Image (cartoon, rainbow, N blue to C red; front, side, top):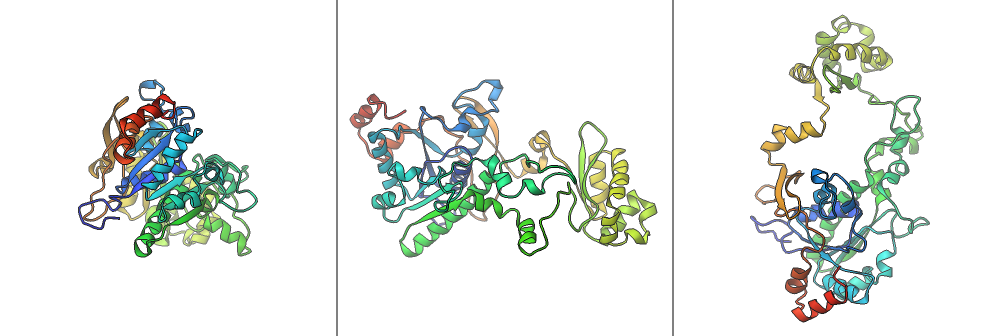
Length: 407
C-alpha cells in the first residue's frame, strides 16, 4: 500500500476478483474506491446474476446495461474467461501470480475444486491474501451450502424482530447479508495487507456472511443470551425512547421520523404539538410515555397529518428534537447536500452513456479518492489485461480466442 500523500491508499495493489452477485462485488468495490486495480473474472457462458437484473436504462435489457451491476462494479476491469477449460484456469493462475489479493464469494470448497483455493494460490504467490466470503464459512456442518442474501435475513434473526405487535416475522426488505459481508471483507483485507507489509506474509481470510450479518443485531441476541428473552416485534418503536416512530404528513405518501430521547425533548415537543400534555406528570418520564405510547402516537399522527414533512422537521429541529423526512429515491437524487459533497458519480459507459450512480461515501484527509471509470462491459479489458499484465503475445491471445477460452 502506498503511503505517499496524493495517491490512493491501495495504489499499486492488484485484486483478482472471482466474485459475483452482491456480497463479493460490494467488497471489491470498496477496494476499487481505495485505489486498487480490481480485475473481475467473468464469463459470457454464465454471466453474473446482477448483469441480468433491472433496472435497465431506458427499459432496454442487456448484459452490459444493468443499473444494478453498473452500480457495484464501478472502477473495475473485466476479463472474460472460461474457467471450465484448463487453458482458462491457466490464465486464472497467471492472474493470481500477479495479484496481491484474491477474492471469491462462492460456497465453501468451490475455489478448491477449481484448483484456486488458498494453498494453490499460495503456491503461485507466497504472500498472497486470499479471502472467501462464503455463506456459512469454510468449516462447520453447513459450510457447503449455497447462500443468498434473502435467506440471511431470517437466519440472522432480523425477521424475528421485524414487524408490528402481533404480526408474523417479516422480511426487512433488503438482503443485509450481502453488503454487510462485503464491508467486513474489505476491512479484513485491509488488515491482512497491513499485516503483510509488516511481516511479508499473506494469509487466508475465512468470512461467514451469516456470522457477519449477526453483528448487526447485538441487542436482540444479547437479550436472549443474558436471559432477558428475545425482544418482541414492536414496529418503529424503541425499547426506551418515546415517542419514537414514523408519522404520515400532508401530501401523497409523505412521512416524517421523530425520535424523543430525553424528558427535555419531550417537553419541547409537547409544548409545540401536544400542549395539554406538557405538564402532565403521567408523561413526564420515559416510562410513563411508554405506558401511554399508543395514545401519544395517535395524537402526534393527527398533528403531523396537517403539516408538510418539511414543516414538521424544521419546527422540531429548531427545538432540539430529532426529526427528518422519510426520503425516497427521488428525494435522494435531488438532495442538495449529497450533490454539494460530490457523492454522485456520472461517468460515460460504453453502452448506456452517462448515468448517475452512488459514489464513495467517505473522504480521506489529504488522500484523493475518486471513481475513475464506469463499470466495465463484459470482457471489455480481456486483451489489455492479457497483453499488459500477463505479458501474453498476440499469437497466444489469438490462440486462446480461437479455442473459445476468452468468453
